[in-house]
Length: 104
Image (cartoon, rainbow, N blue to C red):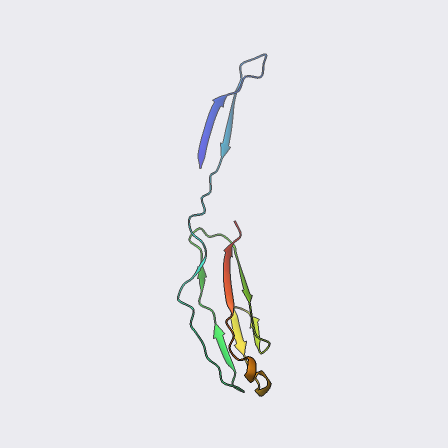
């Protein structure tokens, strides 16, 4: 917390006012506590991948987004589940992009 005090004349009398404000620095982006793994899944198998814990040194709220999730993949409660069928075999190579973003 930084306090800043100064004299602010009101034009007719000399009064003293104070202004207090906080400077909050965002020093670090959110990150996974461990490295994300590359996973491989076979046709007609099911794999559930639980994401590592996420931390933010500033304690900020963050948003997790993902893209390129194949049709045989689902996201729920900090984990991905992949269950490819034979029909998915031609589109098996997928790279899911995961992004963590500070909300501050």
